[in-house]
Image 1 (cartoon, rainbow, N blue to C red):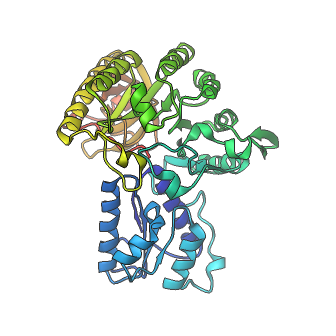
Image 2 (image 1 turned 180 degrees about the vertical axis):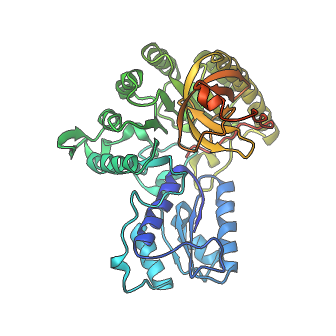
Image 3 (image 1 turned 90 degrees about the vertical axis):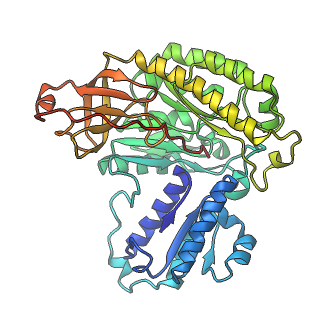
Length: 456
């Protein structure tokens, strides 16, 4: 199976693999060892489309039946024209259709019903963290985005179903749940916030009750893809109480009123600054990460300066930035006054320079503090690569812990921050037994670039 795209697509791949494993299917690390290939595609931007098309071509070259699913699967005509021998094409989260296609390409064993369901399902993440997808689709119609045409309108999962899955993941040893959706803060709107049952109690299908329920599981809970709506205020006290992590991933995209209007974004930059200040007053350790787009059609130098000033005032902790890229089928493609590529790249560089300066200053205030971190990896030289509550996997910074010989992936450990750089922390364990476990401390890591993933 080839899985491309965002964490929400990764969850789709996990669900497909879970069902396949439950029917006795096994995965192969090579095309040669497979009877069929499933390619879960991404089509959010043109470069992602090209990557998906290349992956399909590579899979077809293997001579195995190829089943295409995911966002690009919505473009059946394009795929059939370019790859006329595809075994099947399905859209995003069409699990039954994928299973039917696999059954045709590689008939299942007559003893499939005797195969036990994997505990907690198949996960493509490390054992200690997992993505929890609470809804599918989106009701917004941002001019640069084609997600609604690929994945449909908002479809929330019942809260009892979500909390039951989360409970099973926690019971299986998962230490961190990363809540994902196209718009996490809209959770339950399509269901009119219907009530559901979990642990013998009644819960409403909304963000606040979801956060309260997840907060009972005793694991890290991290909220991604949150829009700054007023009702998000209700989850901030839960962060202050330690029920869920003091972390919000909010794709602001821009701050200039004229650009936000052209983007058709549901936000008000002035009220957003007020809301951020109010959140921090309740939860002072709140980490806010976001992504922005510069060089959007019609963006002027004044618009960009406004964005830089807004960033200075907002003092966001984790920031990524993308130069605007045309997307086939998006309304923004037809807007006037497209910005030249060299100007887009210059603005992106200037934006990231400002963001790096802010990040460096904010991280420096953590020197001398004791933090709880979750270990992701222990290198051969004994250096542990971990994350604090302020760091989501893959997209945020790291905490490098030395000595880390006695640590294991999934360990939660207290560390003291010794020094910082623009994006990362360097720390030592506070437990002297861990410090004394290694004869010598591991060498520090080489220079790394802050990794930015697209926010779908």
